[in-house]
Every structure is written in structure tokens, then in C-alpha cells.
Image 1 (cartoon, rainbow over the protein chains, first blue to last red):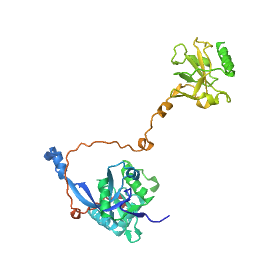
Image 2 (spheres, rainbow over the protein chains, first blue to last red):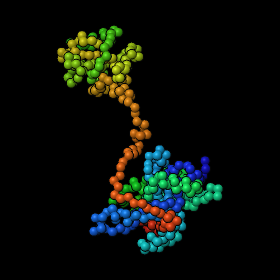
Image 3 (cartoon, each protein chain N blue to C red):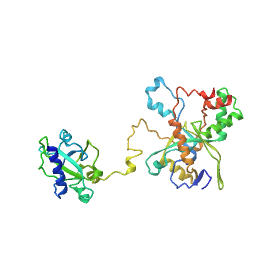
Image 4 (tube, rainbow over the protein chains, first blue to last red):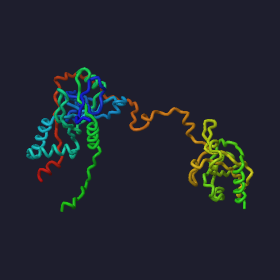
Length: 196
Length: 177
């Protein structure tokens, strides 16, 4: 058994859950769009609200659905390097009036690793031959879809191997995604009498 | 008194290799053999024949009939066989019809079974693949298109997605600790 989280797969290998695709074009909705009177022209509003961006993404669609060709579109979540995430985290901390200390950053990363922050999961670094991948943080609060045919064509046209999460890390990613959706917030938390 | 006669007659016919006539369609109340028979007479039973209103299902003897009881006929599988002709008159005046079945095929008292299992008929039909029936179901659906737009991308010029960190309060609470 290997300690590696990843395998490197050839472009001809069919897509599956846990595949990481870098520099993938995806469509998103603009964060702001006209409302009010213009809302009567919904089609036009939507047409003008589409943005194309480039992102590093992880395939989240179930492996069996892809294998059995049951889905036309593939669900993707973006992932970023630890450095990119730290920049975003520092901005958010400052915006909230908190000091982004080194201690707070470590606690934040520990929380992600431990699964305490539902909208992220962390993927380990890995070296496979000459290819290496650093720690990646997957964002579950952003979800994209792309046509499967498009994604497979893109991978083939690039003709480069891609990182693929191995089991059980692939399932760990999938479970973290599920937990993000299935979580239930309690209006009244447990009172923690053991702390008094 | 009639009960006793009925019981004796059943015993007698049990010993005989009497035969049989397969019911084409019948419903019955399944009862253990020691259930008071008068209870059966009060149950609404449809046998498909208005003259035959009571059916009694008894377990077969351990040695007899084992291999012959279950038979398929006309696309239906019968789990019991008729062992008694309409010679007895039940207390209510109805004819009891006695069937025997393997003990494992007899349910609990008050269970109602039909004379023919539906499964043999279903076996004649091709079943969909298990994977298609369970788990996730993906019907082909047609989307209502609001607009369709040809988009041309120069991927090299597309802006990078900028992460937007959503931070849980837990981090702040820990920091305050």
C-alpha cells in the first residue's frame, strides 16, 4: 500500500471523482446583476450575467455516475494553493476587524484538516516522479458544472497527465462535500454544562 | 360434533393418497392445523366458486408430497395442493376444501394468501437491470431553453478565479481563547 494521496493518470483515462484539473475554463454568474424594471427582460439579464473564468477544479461527481455514463455534466469545485487561500483568509479576517495572526492561521488550517470548517477540505501534498502537487484547499461553497464531453476533450487536447486522488482520499473529499450540504445548524446549541 | 367429524375426515384423507385437482384461483385463510375451525367459517372467503366457501390450509406431513406439492401450471406457481374433495359439510353448511402445503410456506394465522404467487408471472417478464432500478435514477429530460448564446473564449485571456474565504466563527472563538 502506498502512502501517496494521488496517482498520475494519462489523458486518455476516463474522468472520475477526485481528478484535479488545472486551468479549467468555467462559466459563473456575475455577483451583481440588474434587478427591478429590467427584471422583466429575464433572458437578457441572464445572458449578460454570464462570466467565463479560469479555475483549478476538482471533479466532485460520483465516480460510478461517470463510469456508467449517467451524467452529461460534471460537478466541479475549485481548489487553491495554501498561499492563495491564506491571502483570501487574511483579506476576510481584516474585513471582519480581526488580526490575521500566525496563530489564527494555524488554527484555521487545523480546523480545515479536522473537518470543523464545512465549506473546505484540504488535500495533502504529493510528489510523483518529477510531478509534484502542494497542499490544496477545495472550496465547496463554489460549484460549477461543465459538459463532460467538453472536459474530456479539454484533457485530451492538453495531452498531459493529471493528478487523481486515490482511495480513501477520494471518498474523504466526497464525504466532506456531502457534509457541507447535509449539515444542520441547531437554533439552540447544547449548553455545555461541563464547562461550568 | 361437526367439528369432530371434520377433523376425523381430514385425518382420514391425510392418510390416503387422495388426489387432486389444482385450484385455478382461490384465496384462503391460512391457519395452523390446531386453530378452531369454527373461526374459519366466519371469515369472508372468496374461492372463485360460490359453493365452496371455506378453505383450510394444513401443513403437509414431513414425508409425503414434499416433491409434488409445489408445481407450476399455466404460468402460475402453486404452493399447495388440494387434498380433499367436497364430501365434508362444515358446521356452517359450507363445504370445506382442504389444501396442504409445506410448513415453510404456511404463514401465521389470519394471513391471507392467494392461490397463485404473482412471481412466476413476473419471472416471464424481463426485469430491468438492478443498477437501473435502484440508487439514482436519471431520466432523460428536456430543458426549456430560455436563450442560447454562442460564446467564444480565449482561454489564455480569461481571468483567474479569486478565492473568497468564508470563515467560520470557530476560528475567532479559538483565537479569543
